[in-house]
Image 1 (tube, rainbow, N blue to C red):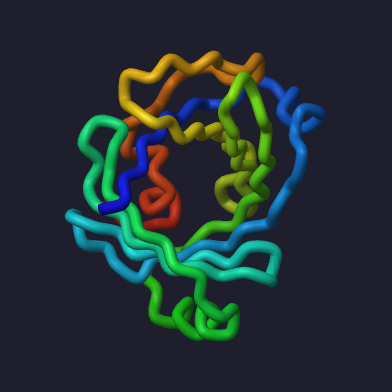
Image 2 (image 1 turned 60 degrees about the horizontal axis):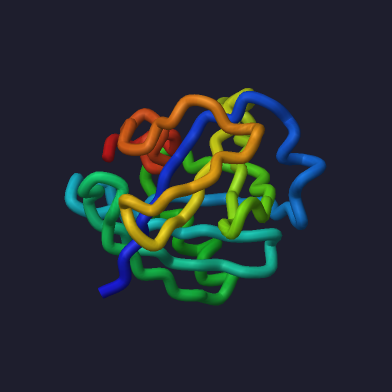
Length: 152
């Protein structure tokens, strides 16, 4: 089984821009609206595509499987997806032994900026970078599937 342990925070400054090592454009949509799982199609920079299955959160941990798929297949799958989908820029920020992902949402979600960090254990100490504010881990309003226009 593959597990994702992730904490999520609201971003309160644009310092992440100068601290980032790369930036990628992401489009993502959801094939499943079932409460016990999400099935996501994601296209990154129009060059890579992934199918991701995620289980229910228990604390900040959940099951996750991700598989690379052909971009053309992903574009076809988007036609089967529910909700509005979402578009965002992801900044990659190395900080104190962790890789932070800062998502800057576009379109109807413009103005929302969220930072996530994957950790090895729920009780792992994480040094917070200077651009993060309130922790929203576990707050369903900030789940990408909810932001995409489906209820998860």
